[in-house]
Image 1 (cartoon, helix red, strand yellow):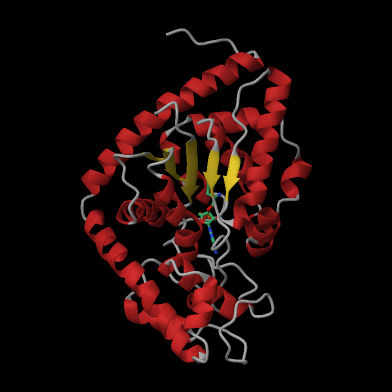
Image 2 (cartoon, helix red, strand yellow):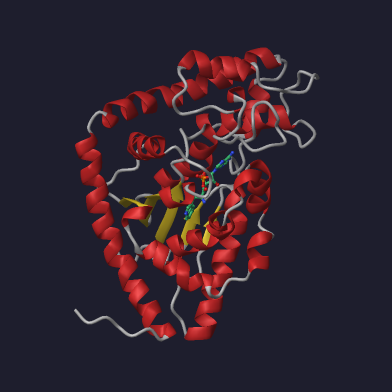
Length: 334
Ligand code: TYM
């Protein structure tokens, strides 16, 4: 770790094949920050257990997400790249932080309320405690920056509150992290209901673009995207469907929103949707192919996981032993 650089931590849950929303909201920024910061990227497998998972599927999703990280340009040689459950300190710090978190703080979290509704048959303690595990992920590495999409902002706020609370009670221990949320693309919406976020757990497969979708599927899904009926390619709050497509096109091509409005002036929605679909397919095609190649070499991925866990563990346990000492636990002698 380079002491002069800021430390960055982020993670994605391997709870299914990730979407274009995850890519634009998170991975895209991770890549940009890789040379500027000490980057630590995790596969948040413990978080996925807060909703029911098929065990074999969870395991294969974890390998698949790791292959997507690498295929998207997250180089395990340039960052620490590991599986959350491989570093026990995450669950251990969660216990300590739990003793200073209040149920009311967790039950008011928007994601907890949403997931309690969508998984009404399984509202478990883990679902409620989810932000505390996320706080532990971040605080163990004293991260300065956490690049996430808009939906994780509230969880970042509770992370900051917990860091400040611990520091006030036991003296300066944790870095209080800053969210890094980009101004464009932090909330990619569903293609079928632009008021909702694009989500990998959406039961309607036409609502999201998966990083496993092939070219034809991607273009077909964009052609079917729900938009208003005025046929003008203008970014506006009153036009959430077309504005979402403009945002996607802007982040994928690097063109500004104004230049897109100019370029497509007088062009109908149909042609614009095809242009967006093609640009997204151009982005995803090589990632998907590279991901499939990487996935064939499980031994390579296991070696990446092993090294990442060793690197992460060294930092995480240093922080955890400091925390244990500060709260008054007796140090274990080796
Ligand atoms: P997860 O797996 O739901 O999503 C991973 C990342 O993708 C972003 N994202 C989106 N961005 C834009 N538009 C969307 N439609 C969209 N959907 C998802 C999310 O904001 C996130 O950045 N709890 C986290 C994983 C996590 C984590 C952490 C993140 C665990 N520990 C520590 C940061 C730091 C989650 O469930 O993300």
